[in-house]
Each structure stands twice: as C-alpha cells, then as structure tokens.
Image 1 (cartoon, rainbow, N blue to C red):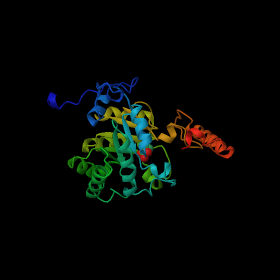
Image 2 (image 1 turned 60 degrees about the vertical axis):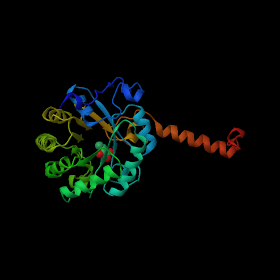
Image 3 (image 1 turned 180 degrees about the horizontal axis):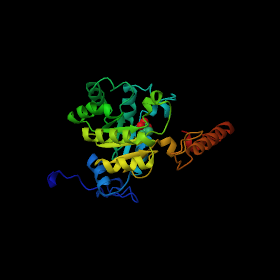
Image 4 (image 1 turned 120 degrees about the vertical axis):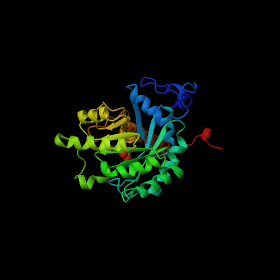
Length: 292
Ligand code: KIV
C-alpha cells in the first residue's frame, strides 16, 4: 500500500472515543473504515460496537463515538417481538438498515444477513449482500456460520463486499444447537478456532465470537490477523458488542450473564410516560406555551 492509500489514522482512543471527526476537530477520519478497525487490532486497542435499528439511536451512538453500528437480525427479537431471530426477512432488514444509515455519520455500519438469505449458495449470499449495500446503504455484512461458509465468504470478498464472520453461538442455528448455549467448551474449542481461521483466511475482515469461553476467544484473537469482536467472549477481543437495549437497560426480565446495563432507560421512559399521562389527565398539559 502506498502512503497515499494509507487510511487516515484513527484519532480517538478508548478513553476519548469522540476525539477527531466525532468532536468536529477534523483530526480523525470522517468515517470509520475497515482499515481503522485493523489499526485497533494492530495497536492493541479496543473498539465498541452496538446494535442499532433506527435513526435516533444510530445518531446518539454515532455522536457518542461508537465505532461500529450493527443492524442486527436481533431486530427480530428486540424490535419486532419475535421469539427468535429466524423470522426476520431481508426486506425487513433493509428497512432497519436504511434507518440506521440515515442516522450514522461516522460509524461503520454492518448489517446481518438474515436466516434464509445466504445459506443456499455463495451466489445467494452475494445477491442478498448487494441488496443490503445498495438499498440499506450499509458498509459491510455479517454472516453467521463456520468453515462450511468459506465459499460464501470468498465469493463476497471477490465481489468487493466486506464480510464479518460470526462464529461460536450463532442464534440463527439455535434449534440445531439446542438453545442458547456456550460453544467451544472443552474439546469443542478446536472447532471454534478452525472456523475462525478458515473464515479469516477466506477474506472475512473481522471475526465476531458469541458465547465462547474467554480463553478460547483469546486463542482465536491470537490466531487471526484480523480484528475480533466478542459478546460473551471475555475481554481479549479487539472489540465488544452488545444489543443496545441490553446495554441501556431498556428490556425487562433476566438478562444473559454477559450483559451489563449501563443505564436504566426502561425506568426513565416509564417515568416520563407516567408524568405525561398525569399532566394530560390533570389538564396541565398542554399549557399556554404549547398552544397556538
Ligand atoms: O443480531 C445481533 O444483535 C447480533 C449480535 C448478538 C452480535 O448478531
């Protein structure tokens, strides 16, 4: 790569993720791009990824300096109310993707290839990904599955479509895997490692690991040159991802062990709704200042 082709160095740090472009100083890249994620890996720094499904959360997370936004097929559970990620369609994913890309100025936006949109053949994976890039305006796609999908990843890479591999627990296969279970324990660790190495060798720009033991994720991170991302995979990966509703304390009920809620947005929204309803009932809202 010539100097002219080098990506602008990433100006943010984990301690100050809004430095540079996000802070309007012009010191960082206008858009986080794949080479910037590689810089995180090469310099031993971490980056943050969150899911987003709409323009407001996309803009809020983008302004907060989140480097990567994932239009996850978890929209099926977290937005649409399905029990699993399986029912969401490619057309529905494109609507969510388009909403997120409308709100994100700086983050790299990655969208999931939903169940049924890539398994049949590499050509199907390429066709579906083209729709996500062309209609959803995302910058990259994510695909669940192991070494079996090497031909799909190769075809995407050959078509110039950046693909993030997703190994370990893959929610689209939850029926085959027997439910939400940690993958790669004991002797099964080698399979996770083999999958990750095969997919990275085939051209994946990043390997995401879900629910694998921390020491296995660390082994994978050491074995592949590309950045890694973890969810329930310990802290040795280059990046971390959480579903935003989990991160912000939006959902009720018991959360998985790997989730940390950094706020209690559910209570804040609930309180706001109660106060609104009380003012409507008492007649104090709308007041003269809200009336024409
Ligand atoms: O769809 C999603 O939210 C995901 C994350 C769990 C990584 O794939």
